[in-house]
Amino acid sequence: MVFTVYGEHWRKMRRIMTVPFFTNKVVGQYRFGWEDEAARVVDDVRKDPEAATEGIVLRRRLQLLMYNNMYRIMFDRRFETVDDPLFEKLKALNGERSKLAQSFDYNYGDFIPILRPFLRGYLRICREVKEKRIKLFKDYFVDERKKLASTRAMDNAGLKCAIDHILEAEKKGEINEDNVLYIVENINVAAIETTLWSIEWGLAELVNHPDIQQKLRHELDTILGPGVQVTEPDIQKLPYLQAVVKETLRLRMAIPLLVPHMNLNDAKLGGYDIPAESRILVNAWWLANNPAHWKDPEEFRPERFLEEEAKVEASGNDFRYIPFGVGRRSCPGIILALPILGITIGRLVQNFELSPPPGQSKIDTSEKGGQFSLHILKHSTIVAKPRVV
Ligand code: HEM
Image (cartoon, rainbow, N blue to C red; front, top):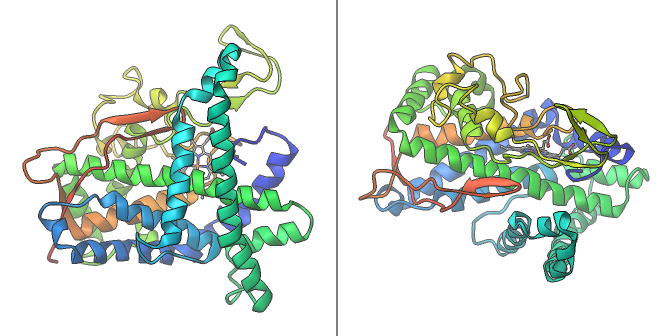
């Protein structure tokens, strides 16, 4: 769906994906799973003596959390540890895809046709990686679920997982097997990495701003009570936690240019003629970081969302702030991403004092950007000292 041209096919895919992924019912059904995954991260980090002294690369464990959050929704499955061989295979292949997508190689060919012949090697690798990934999704996940479904009722007391809904649409002839596999593919790309980058950025900013981290911890302790673990419904009672998430998505916007759009018809914009079928990139990062429209935009200051920008939401009610896009092609995953970010960041701050490794006053927040992402350059080592509450 992500790269589909606007039209009938896109409309159908978006409709078919809505019930299994993008409703409040899905949030109500899976939030216990997200809370459980966050609790398991807390347990694992507590058990690791290195975490409290030298520090650990927290992202490694959070990647497992994000895969599990989404694979529970898709397939009612999770991976037990970061060393699970199937998880490693999946992660490696998705990682290869991500590197290829972040390369600017394919753009040369799009914009300078004479360079296209030099792209052949790159495109061949893209095709190979795609085929390997699709085969993995089919053999290990979709076919497995089909096998399970043929041996027992899959409705888990009326609660189907996403792939059951999608396979039902295939059975009805609304979509074909390729469409099913590309839905799985899309979720792997659109949901897991984006949310993981944002969690990673949020934690990095909290490590480098101990005063903000402490203020957030204070909110959690006072509103929930010491030691009471944050859950999804609590988030609406925690304005500072919400502001930390919003500020992370503003300053460290995961998809800074959104996904390329295309105008179907000739258009005029700001006095310019835009021919039909142009590729339109929206610089959403600049909209949210332009000093003409934001006070000290280079500063990580969640308070702005409680003070001068209190009315601004991530859902696109203000065109200066559209980390999930806006309008019909905006991100439907916002309904899942915001609670997952709140639960995960909230639990870590409740349970640990997060700081840079010994001898460092800050962690390195250099950025690495591709057309489709703005992520942290180095996965930082973070000291996570368990709190006694
Ligand atoms: C912090 C996390 C996330 C961010 C920042 C994010 C951001 C975005 C952005 C900017 C777009 C393109 C909007 C546009 O071009 O106008 C998009 C599209 C999309 N996102 Fe997300 N996303 C996140 C999480 C998720 C999750 C968790 C899912 C699924 C479970 C998801 C599924 C999708 C899909 C399917 C599209 C394509 C929509 C369409 O073309 O109609 N995203 N996302």
